[in-house]
Image (cartoon, rainbow, N blue to C red):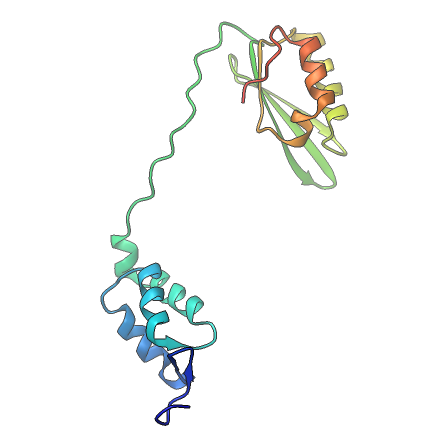
Length: 170
């Protein structure tokens, strides 16, 4: 207590009855979440002040309208495959109703094959790909999200033995 004020680490502790008034005051210049938090941390404190500031800024229509547009994400550019089964894209989805689903897309035809499994292990992935390779042939490239089932030694060995090239595309 200093001069009839509650002080915490050189900041004034604000009672709940005054918090909204001070939030409005701090936000009057529309500084954004980070700058408003910085300003508040210099002088004020109350439990949950960071969350209150974040909510104040997120609910401000003016701030939302004037916010910077997020940077465009550079999409990976793939050349068109020379033919069917040259490049396959693999990913798992799920669980859904206790099952996992391996999605396999042929980049040439945009053909989608879905394989239902109980788990998404390297062994289950290999079994599904063996079946697919027996019907459509061996691919030149396999593209994955580098999940554990796609980066295991077992899967790497399978790829080296069953694809035209020994490296996976990332």
